[in-house]
Length: 129
Figure 1: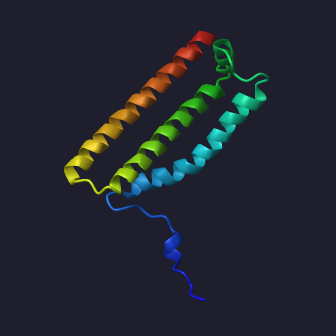
Figure 2 (figure 1 turned 90 degrees about the vertical axis):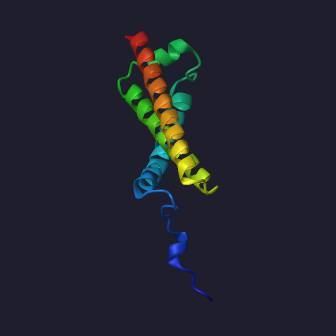
Figure 3 (figure 1 turned 180 degrees about the horizontal axis):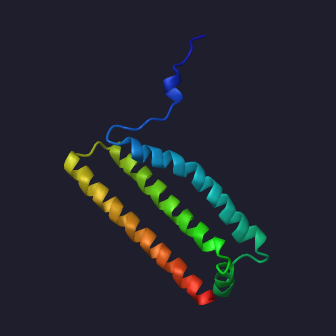
């Protein structure tokens, strides 16, 4: 029986993807799974009827840990998804100039999404104060 190469099963940065982007993607994956599980358990199983109304969500956000967890969850989702999307676009082998435009668009999208999400969390927290 032929023995397969161990490098076949090792994840490594793609061409055009630096080590830091790859590292962020690898670290955010497991964090994302953990935070998603916590999010589902707390929102759908711990809350007696689930968080069905705005008043329920505002009351839920009174716990100081929840807004912090939700902001970390948001940042993790945005970072992992946009770096993953960039990896898919790298498979199309874009020109260097186009890759810079894509990077700029992804960065702008990420900053916008995180800014809006943090603003929304802060608004909800202020309603419960």
